[in-house]
Length: 313
Image (cartoon, rainbow, N blue to C red; front, side, top):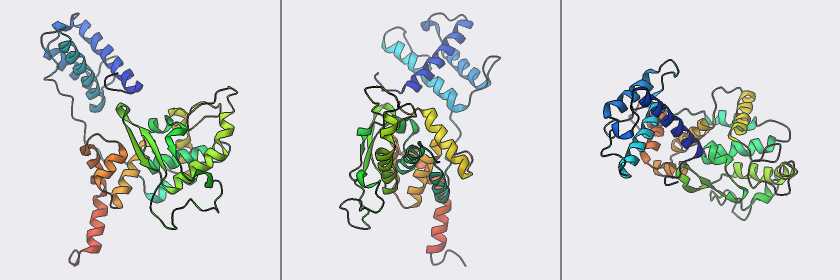
């Protein structure tokens, strides 16, 4: 409650602490005040090595478990249940620095164009357009309500020949926005580009009403993206829509996070400031966002080679 953690995070912490308790009891530790720093360190080593019942954990998963254990002992100390904190000196393992995966702009276009056919095609296209246009996490997208969208000109989306509002032709001002709820319940307002706004408008006008009545219930779901039964689209359903589109487009290893990485990388390639990208992604620290600058180094070399008068001989 205090940290506003997501349900999936709480479930993961619960599993980690249950494994920790089982490990301690196997060594004869039945009271939290008897736990030593070496016990915590041995637990971390066991996570990395694995055992007969558990495979070895990657640094990121082991790190999450250590964070849960550190939180438990810090809580026990704060509540006066223990005289010291044996986990304070045990640091989570540093995960390897991996470059985010991103696909090219033409591949993104192929993916979006492959949203499929049938009653759910408009929904799937709107979902994929939104993921790429905003860099939203998959949990943020499926958690959206209709009221979280502010599409000032959505009514024109189903009429391709109509003018998109009062903005001057060629105007770069984006008046369409979406309110995303990120980690820790933090909200951010993100602009929605014209392609995504058109796809969302078309879905809201031409597809969502039919999906909303499919449940047969008196009170329709407030969710933006609905499944064939009229309920809120699940993470698994959104993943399925993306995988199907990726297969039709001939693309491998495409995930919602790949679209998020592509969103950030393409913005930086286009000259966006890293602080702006940080705000759009909802990162608490700019350090997290700066990893995307590593994948644009080839782009920087290209610009330098073409722009500097003495870059090449």
